[in-house]
Length: 271
Image (cartoon, rainbow, N blue to C red; front, side):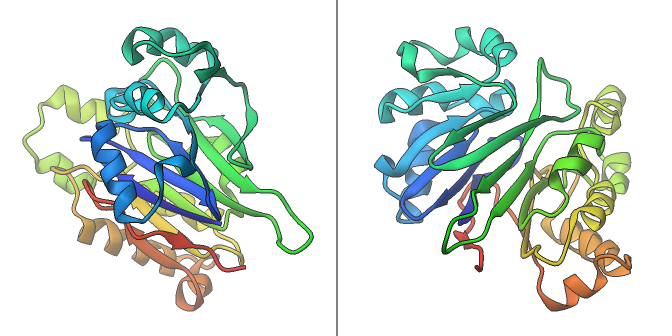
């Protein structure tokens, strides 16, 4: 099983998860052309993409969804509430491309579970994408949470024990406090329907990590209120200070930061 980010941040988000030659996309908040270019940099063929799962309707997550679905003739998976707000935004689609889903479904041979996050959108979801257990391979899971103003009970329930994480480390509190954003926007970002601060995320990860955890990718960093260096340093420090995660950090877990405009290298999980 493997995964990566194709773009990450307020300018656009897209995540790839797959196994062998079968892949699904989580969001497409960049242009279809840019996404296909980023896929080509990873030597992934257009024909290997089997569907797009939408987490919420903000433009930095759906900008290229309609265009890409039409070009690749693939389905879009979203809840009823998201379809209600997305229908006017995605353009013309064939009926069999509008896949209405609830909590769980299968795409590209992988089990996808949706759970609610806390964000200022019509609906907002995180994902747990799992490979079912097979005769020659054990079960694996990638936990995804890129837009939430707080760590929710659902996040604790579904993310604990994942083999890898793509999770939001949006801002550093001191940078936000001293930054140029107006007061109302700072309040929105800090609020329970905004985004996760580096320390908040690290405290969540310290609970979710278990002996099978291999990789963590910090995603959706603010361009103005965070830096890759601060996010990485803060998260690693808190994880190493935690009794639960200290040994894992020293022995096996690697932490990465998702690039803003380019794809991260493909991360292959060890069996």
